[in-house]
Length: 209
Image (cartoon, rainbow, N blue to C red; front, top):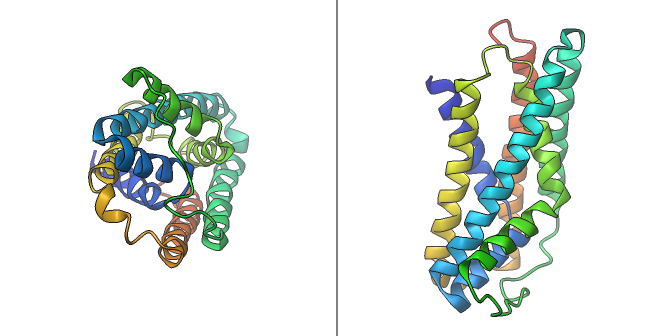
């Protein structure tokens, strides 16, 4: 039971390092409007990721029964994550911490949740990433049911927890979010994602997978 939890926490830690629109929106919202609105944005992102997880997991589960193509599906998923990591590594940091202006038009916290959900859902890389993850685990016969729940729950829990942490310490982070800082954040997370993709491809050919 520890394998899916550890794997999920590791993947969630990598995702927490990714620098993108959601990262800046949470930071800026916390600085300008406070922790609660930023935490509601993070919750909206969590709901969006959960939606993608359900969509991609059950979609890949249908392919699970096509055993003749299980390795093809798994390798494709691993390559997708690897490509995502390489792209992230070479991605240029063109956005600063002050580049996103947060309009204080939220009348209720529900609107903040919708904002977070919409921003993440409209990001095409989010769907591609979760497709890659689902593809790599769909070929593992033991990674169903409770195992899959523990894996995805650990991943999403780690991401949500770190998003809340970003919102909480945002005022301290503002001074260190420079172009050079973002470049290294992208490089570290890109390398980690690429390594994860390679690892999952190797695991597909492992007898224990």
